[in-house]
Length: 397
Image (cartoon, rainbow, N blue to C red; front, side, top):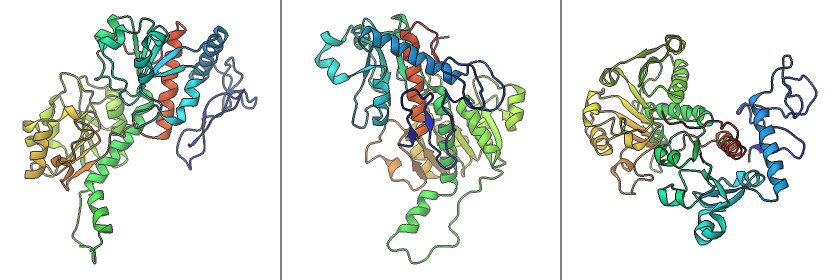
């Protein structure tokens, strides 16, 4: 576990030095070089005394509410899918969560609904589970908030949830950087045929490597980003390091100064972006409008050498049309962190194509990001239980 959890009296969680990876956060309560004036004591950092910083404010909230709850003699109940197994809460997070909450698994709840229905005040969604439906919501009369790990909310019926007076929060800040990193990793892997190369390099029968086995150049190529939200914009920033020409298609145009900062050009029509791009990166949210956004017609607009990268949701793409396009040379390759379903059936044709790179929906799967997700979800739940403004609350338009 690459995190140093503080002992009693120590302030913020602090990532260990990971050889340059991860933002270093010093704990509060150290008197040297004060930076902020939070109730927990001065923070370490350069510069003059400032207002309480957000991380200290969040920690102060956690401690204040937890103390108040402890004085009441019982921790608030929070429903989770499981505490172990592939869909359970991250094992490394359980001890921290249990400082604030009584974690109730779905199995426990189903077996003891009478005991738990009044006590559960929040639902903690990790990896898309537990599934939320009307029956579950109506069985929890004390429910105040659903905290969702990640940014995508297509698995939640937001109008239904809000109509029952239940708040929803997600974790957009925690996931945007690692997901953008993965998007670039997939782009590079597909362009340079990394997986194919690995298979050749380790093949038992390999006696020689062909000097004419090649991939595509990334530097100077054209990248088309579909969905220029936080993740899409961070991808654009990374692509500038490769001197890529950046096009983007989005529901709303970015500010001119934001475009200029990454050298991005806005495309009013998706077909214009598809025709020009060497790489097409899907970073849009799944909505009724974006479902099936890339179909047979759109794939035929792309260059025969183009690479399609999807780090959003599998349903943005007509998968049957994609298989056909990859098999017949309509496009050059695909790199997919998301599919529909997940995982794909073991006999699915996408699993057999050499020009496909697949990862198991790991956009936010770093120790740092998942820890931050847990912290953000904890803060949102505690805020809701304490009647305070909820960080990262999702509001319907």
